[in-house]
Amino acid sequence: MADLRTSLAGIESPNPFWLASAPPTNSGYQVQRAFEAGWGGAVWKTLGEPILNVTSRFAAVSFNGQRVAGFNNIELITDRPLEVNLKEIYETKKRFPNHAVVASLMVEPKQEKWHEIVKKVEEVGVDGLELNFGCPHGMAERGMGSASGQVPELVEKQTYWAKEAAQTPVIVKLTPNITDITSTAEAAVRGGADAVSMINTINSLAGVDLDSWNTIPHVGGKGAHGGYCGPAVKPIALNMVGECARHPRINVPISGMGGVSNWQNAVEFMLMGASNVQVCTAAMHHGFRIVEDMIDGMNNYLDEKGIASVRDLVGQSVPKYSDWGNLDLNYKIVARINNDVCINCNKCHIACEDTSHQCIDMLQDGHGNAYLEVREEDCVGCNLCSIVCPVDGAIDMVEIESEHPPMTWNERQAILSGVQDGKANTVK
Image (cartoon, rainbow, N blue to C red):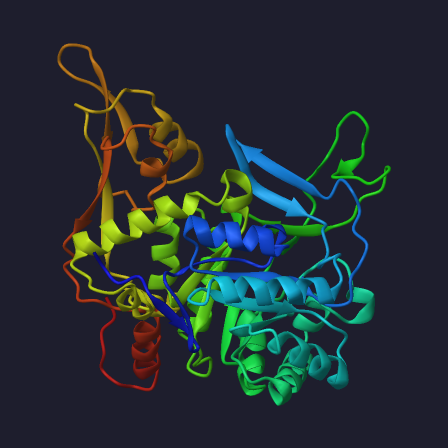
């Protein structure tokens, strides 16, 4: 079996699957149950000055029969006294010395506040600290959560303050509620962060009840924006992890999260640069035992690939992730319909005819049987027909050999500039 042990900025754990800072890590009882189930690490629910939470705090978005495709919450940080949390952290780490226990922290943007909480938390034996600069709801009026995380200067300054007092690795958890997450990731690195984690939840409103006109959820007829997570946010998270992983000045490890629901998702995040993954919504939906399937699936995948260590996955797809201007304009694929598999639902024809490039014809053979055929000379290889097709194997996207050598937009523009300067170049 492959070696699943991971290290994030020196924080060791027996496998790459951590629970994210959230309701599943609210107490020692929960974290210890998680470790017994097989989780490699846990980021304790955010510590700070205890707050009062409201009831009716969660909501979910279901889609096409899938329950909890997206998850929304308006829950704040821990509502339990700091001393109680610290006692349970100490007991948990003592009982599970080989598992990663990281404390999530959120305090006001004041140097003395960061020094105070860092020292208190490290005294009970945590393996690392995660600075919560990402929570999009609540505490904003005190300059906390994403109110800080959206301002690179505050991210850098507060990271620096935490590092002044910290003896363990400092991870900075970043908000996705920003135009360019690399700006705050780079600020965290300038502040001395040992790692970054992403993404925190996305500003959201789960829905509106069409009968009462109340928001979902609502608290006595009033609602507020919350944080969105779950499978629906995975593409957003994966992009942000990839953008940071390929950024030359964000040269620290990444802990990836945002819609990680199974071992396949974990592999994707690690290929895009994450050293480990954090999970929340999937555990809330299915319970802690889902980690068993994650571990088995990861082991089998690595064995089938002949990969000795899960660490060898990290960043392997990052060189393949680039800007649009670096894509080959002469690369060509076309759709081909396998009529022995096609069920003649015509979804591909409708999608292409109405919303794409009108290159799928409805024809009849010599016996009057209807069939579909792609006019390959008009097909732009957009993939839409294969995406809407309900039958695996009915449509293949086939690579066509180009008569021209590879040519990117950037290269084309450089050649055109040369032509305009009087140089003899040809653009294909």
